[in-house]
Length: 630
Image (cartoon, rainbow, N blue to C red):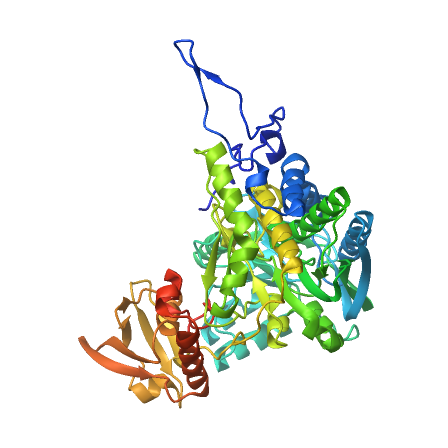
């Protein structure tokens, strides 16, 4: 999936001109005229399903019609990722984005405002940065710095010296450290006694700065992160660069081989005294029948500033804003209003730890009981392909999302060769705590959802990396996603009752209690077994290699997490120890979370007979799919 983003001119919703293909608009009627065969006789063409086939609700039909004829989701994303650019919390660009979003939402008829959730103690503005190798040959270098880190005053040209790994290397390299750029080899341990001793010596030498590898020697991605400082009077002064992994490895190799490596860098970072006020953007389309109840759609407006924050998360903001616009236009054209209030929330401070959403939940406890659902788009530019729901929600959510399935059937009828964009409700045991703005709401007992997404975009290639720019956004996917969000928000607002909270609260995931080392083979080796863990009770030892859990072969941490969370609390583990295989028992059945799991399972079996369960209920998922090792 890595590589250039392809743009499709497929007829996804029936109108080619509405899909970013920029061809003359072709209206596809629900009752096409006669088709003439080669022999000249008239042959009736099969009827193409019209918009009326999607829903009986005039607002839903109008949403689809407007989305096909006049989608503006691409323009919203372009405004954020191109015109405004990176939107770090505490930066002037984010304030510009807040004001633009507030003004835009207000212009569509929503009541919009910015609401302060807190302050950032130190502001940060990333300026231009240049880096190059001067000797032994000249070439440009690709690097970044962390947010809230200092830059250089001017261009700094100096010899590159490799970080000393021991006292002997320190003695040999110490004469060359002053004003040098110090290359820190990938995997260097700076926390053990030797590492701390080397760090002290390097600090005292007065180097130009440290250059870390942004990734492994074959890695070309540069991830931007950073930690906001709480005191402007005590800011870091050391310049720290993160150079592309493959380029860094080449420089280390050359310097260690005795070549004279000369580098030049200039970084115009600027830290500014705070406090800098931080805001969420909130806009509402008031409901008629139940105005005090709310359906929330949104995403985070802020981004890291190593790129322009297109995939993460101009894409999600654009679909939420376009969904709101589509609903507002449809209401104006039909004269209808939602029963419940539809709210757009664009949070900030998400990249620093869900600060904006947590701040809102903290400050608005009295409003939480009246929120039916919070739908968060923060998974990139792939099309929205589903939603995780509990068994108690499933029937109601099937009705909410029925028009989406009809839209896909219609697309397939109009353009059988086009890219399919199916939608599926994924039944899960409990609401899933994702590292996004849905989580503070779930923890406060509000049904929060993080959309499932699918498609050809490689999210990891763009997420927080130097490649996260506007060309990565796939407009066809964005158009479908905005439509899904709009229809979901409207149908949830019109639903007979709010989304069920019964048995929805998150349960503690099953933790094995080991530190793992993926050695590049097919299985995982245990580095350490934590005291008191399920792994220790099972008899797992450091050095064991995990081969399988129950009948699931293990080939990685993600695969292991999946095996642990499915099925019963008592599992068989097959491990390799000192060349032979043995079987052990992993048992979580005594934990409180497992007792609650068992209670929910029994209740669901009584309420939802097996013959009425969807196929996906045959093995309920247990907790979130964590990316890290258990």
